[in-house]
Length: 265
Image: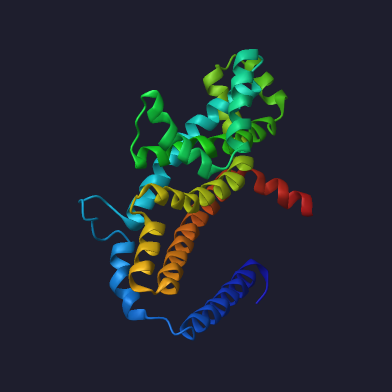
């Protein structure tokens, strides 16, 4: 079988073969699958924590989704500041991006959680983790968004202005759809990294996936079972984000499909 369908079939067969090999390797490690079955509902967040709050995957997803939304807003504002001719806006945007890209995320989490209370700003562990993730990834996303905006030829915006279109229409109807094609692939990578970096909030005692895996590992002396289970869950969540990313890439790349096909003729 040739063509795109044949290629997809061969890719799927390759995945199945590699998954079978991976399962075989895990099976031969002598893991305690009964223990995994007992702890899995707690790690998936199907049970509430002792204080009645969500835990495990449910808490991990909550932290990630809220941080994604806030980081997007921060990134857009920072990208606009980086593109601004206003010295103050440009200076604030570049300083913020430099600081949060130039310091470790773990240090930022600890500063927000431990240092801010000395100035009268007391945040919970959950809020501190979300703020740190949002500010850190907002700095990286800002450069991705800026690159996407700059990839759109200036002539298109100038032509739209000449036609009398408003700034909002130009931004959302002309520039944004074209910029998204450039923004989505690296932004998807950032969000997948954010999903995994949400495990850093475990240092503040939040019962998210990584915290539960380590706690159950210490309590049962079966670290391998718990850590491999957590790794598998993170992987499946990442695959879900990759599928969303691929769908968005196809959606915003439809207008350029003809150009690519024309270029190969």
